[in-house]
Image (cartoon, rainbow, N blue to C red; front, side, top):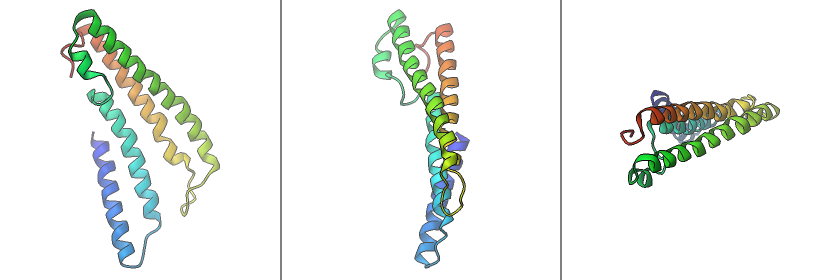
Length: 146
């Protein structure tokens, strides 16, 4: 959560600085790259944080109406879907990361891979947090989890 706050704060500050420098007629072109980096990492770290907190990614309303084996089956299925998405993020994010070394960001000339690194990182965290929820749910039940 702290990293999300840092990314959102960094995004806000850099957008503000970008607006001010443009209004003064002396734009800092590199600010757009920094802003984009904060935004992208904020989105992917936020996705991992939402997974950890069990927010937005599950069929909560349907699951809360069930109990026992039906709830366990639905909660398990839901988390297995999220786990499959996490593995897609890891695999395809890694492929994008490798491909990102072929293109450079302007004006800094840094590889686009620096942006794409957040995708597999997010996938690893989402997979880890989802596995944690599955194990805890199987051991202690999903009913009391929020």
